[in-house]
Image (cartoon, rainbow, N blue to C red):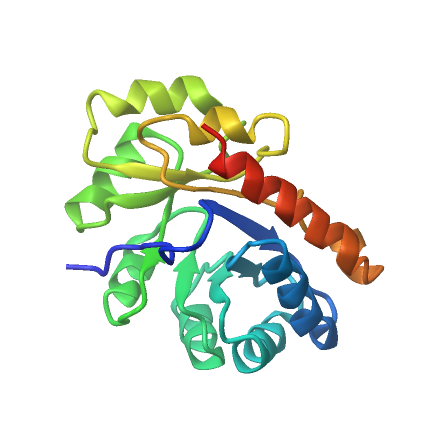
Length: 211
């Protein structure tokens, strides 16, 4: 049975999805997010610096619950684990990747955009999934539709989530968290706009805490 994904008790249910092009900036990014109350980050493997960035954050800012995203192969899974990732995220699933994930203690958020994809992952014991691409897969309407037939599955919608619709997703009964790039977009990371990223993280944390 795979390990259930669970956010730290004191972490807001919001996961910034980030692309880091310069690993030297990674610790400052983590500190900026932490200062804004965000304690969970997904560093995507969409840049050559991603693995070094994961190592830098886990070493310098251990308070961060850090995941590696855009995992597509077993080899990437191994590299991300060796770099220190505490959890893994994929936009979808394959039989090979599911079997590879079973070999690791870290939880894995597999992506699903349809009932069939969610059911397949459920058969393997994965009950917390990434809903991707959220906006493109029908968004809130689809998630509400999945609640009835799949009541034991909860989702982390990612893809098209922003400060304007984040609360609408968080209010759904079958959503345990959301992911998005609006808190720490690549251009702000590249510009080292740490104060702006902290402000966005604070706003997101307040949004998540509001009733």
